[in-house]
Structure formats: structure tokens, C-alpha cells
Image 1 (cartoon, rainbow, N blue to C red):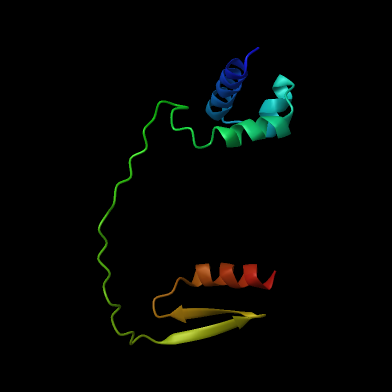
Image 2: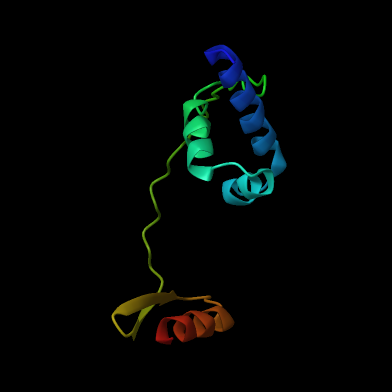
Length: 105
């Protein structure tokens, strides 16, 4: 088998894997392929934009950054271990309870 034929065969396998939704380990195991060797081929074809016939287009969005308004609300700082949580007016008490419990664990 020529070098080009080997590459084409691996390219087809990599494309099949990409469309499978499986992990590389599971996909290789079900096809009796060496996962280390397979991952080398995946990396080799990673920059290959023709693998799925898709062309990637970058679109830029404009962003307007506004200066934050001066904060005149009250702030309560809750310390839990080495962490702290700032609580402001209008906070969600249930959320605060869950965060404190998670930090205490």
C-alpha cells in the first residue's frame, strides 16, 4: 500500500471517528485499533480544513463597553474557610445557602 493510500485510509477512519460522537478510546477499542497510533493521525489531520468539506469563517462583532455605575448598594462579606462571598442587596437567599454549603464541604 502506498503512503498516499495509507494516509487516505487513516483520513477516512478519522472522519468516521469525528462523526461518531464516541471517545477515541471507545471508538478504537470497538475497531481493534491502537489508540495511541490513532491519536497521532487525529493530530496530523487536526489542521486539515478539508476533512469535512467545511470552510471556517471568522466573524468579528463590535462590543461596546460601558463604565460601571458607581455602586451605592450595601455589601456583606461572608467568609467560609479561606473563601469569601460578597452579598449585595436583592440577593437570592437559597443560592447563598447552596454556595455556603458547597464551600463548607
